[in-house]
Amino acid sequence: MPWVNKKSVLLASTAVALSMVASSAFAGGFALREQSAYYQGMSFAGNGTTGESISSMFWNPATLIGAGKGLTIESHSSFIMPESDIDGTFTPGALTTVNGATSSTAGSGDIASDAWVPSTYTAYRFNDQVVFGLAVNAPFGLSTKPEQNWAGQYYSRSSEVFSVNVNPAIAYQINDMFAVGVGVQAQYLQVRLKSAYPFSTSAATTEFKGEGYGIGVTAGLTVRPWEGTEIGLGYRSAVANNLDGSYINPGGRFFAGMTPVSFAGNRAGIEATVVTPETVTLSASHRINDTFKIAGTVEWTNWSRLKTVHPSSDGGTATTNPTGLPNLEFNYDDGWFFSVGGEYNWNQQVTLRAGVGYELSPIDEAIRSTRLPDNDRLWLSAGMTWSPSDNLAFDIGYSHLIPADTKIDISGNHQDYNSNIGTYTGKVDSQVNIISAALRYTY
Image 1 (cartoon, rainbow, N blue to C red):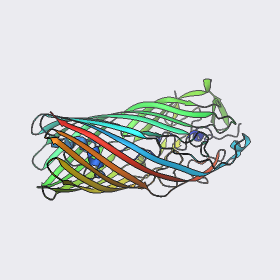
Image 2 (tube, rainbow, N blue to C red; image 1 turned 135 degrees about the vertical axis):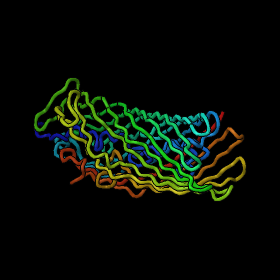
Image 3 (cartoon, rainbow, N blue to C red; image 1 turned 90 degrees about the horizontal axis):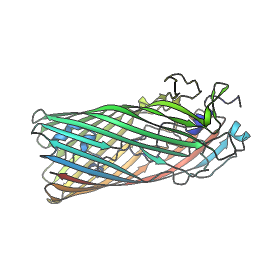
């Protein structure tokens, strides 16, 4: 098939290959916000300021200065229960028609997968001024899996990702007003993406998979301008994950321009660099009295750095693809998150909290795909803490997410559209429920 263009094969496997996860990621794009049961209960309002939980170090390492004496250990678990269905119409293109594809309105079924997202935090206070901390998180991930032969199968069948981020950090209390913190991120990322092979009447599947590592930093500052008020500014840097893996193609070849390039065993080794974005978190909290505390957060995520990813064959370079692998276009906008919340000390053992948030997705209809049907969403949250003793506490948080009306239109000038494959237009119906729980103990 010498008329197949350079995008025909790999873009058929994924409309946003290397985006790694679809609608079951819940911090905009493919990030996971669910890193703290304590702050989940306030829709993450005030998560960059010090509180009873040291989980705030994920957003601002300077907040470690709020840790108690000795050793503090926290274990958090978030259980994400999403529902997401895509209904629409696929109209075959030039080559899918030749190979027997017909128009289809088969629904995706529930593409979202339930998930458990764990995180742990440890802090050790050396003295009144210095605290060391260690966080282990899964900041990016989850998976989606529609029905095998749904209408959009040529643009996506399944997406899976696994990440681990290890973050040692240290905080220093400069004086009664200022504290600072710095840390290092070591991140592991594993990706697997599948789609139907469009140029065959069989149920063959193309697959991209890869894994790699990257290094980043964290930094932060807290300011207490007057009694009862705190302002926190935290930063998590971008991490360049250098992935090594393979691309499996049942056709056994890529296309470099008009020339087919074969590779043995229907498999080619590939390399790619995926840069997860930096995040800046600005938070404030104010204790009105011994009973009430209010808080707020504004968070910016630099998703717009994800423009084009250049995968290459083993032995290639970041800008030349001798086997015909196409560049992968993202063109995300920046992401924003806003939240307000508060907590009420019911008694010495029980604290109640609630919050509301609104998230501006980095993805709009101009670039939205079947693999990542992300959109703006409203967060409604509530939670509580039970402290049976001075050194032991249990946190629980609940959030219900309501996405805006979401449409997909892969046709015309859409960056993922390929006339050889065909068009897909549809509507996404989704909602998310999240339950988080944590145990906190100080030795």
